[in-house]
Length: 244
Image (cartoon, rainbow, N blue to C red; front, side, top):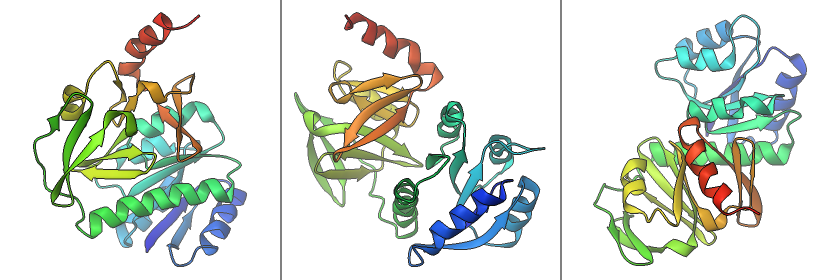
């Protein structure tokens, strides 16, 4: 079970997230509610915390600056009313980003994502590292003590989390201990493009580009992937060559 704290200077936001957490008692439990970063710092020093819901816009010290100040932070889900801060959150390897007003459905998706990461880390399910083997239209990666064949056309996007990567596909996922850099080099550049230090996307799966986000469909639902500052220019050059 995830042990969580909420950090937000708005009482209503604290109450909403607390109510959401109480609706899924078997998945997550609330350790503390904090109205500022200093309160949160004290809780982190005194208690075990797996996940922090962190508001970005707070007086005295912003959520972004607070996270940067922590040496060993827990997983973080940013919450804010300002969508333009989403990229900052992803650059700090946040698990997810929730835009206020937050719906319970969107909250659940973020919590499930954090729970997935927590389980992989705590249960030792991360596979051993192995060399990547590539073919004309497929790649072999080591996962769950076997080499798994993944067709390029089946890949929606690849996500880097901590020391491993998750290959997301319509019919499931493959988890392997690799670096994003090694995959970026091995995968055919005509099909895949690095968007961010934590994301590689199949160009054929891009539905739209909106500001600093790329839109794809994952299992019938819209998913937004961030475009990092160092990758934006190259991606837009490719898009512009193929636009009307």
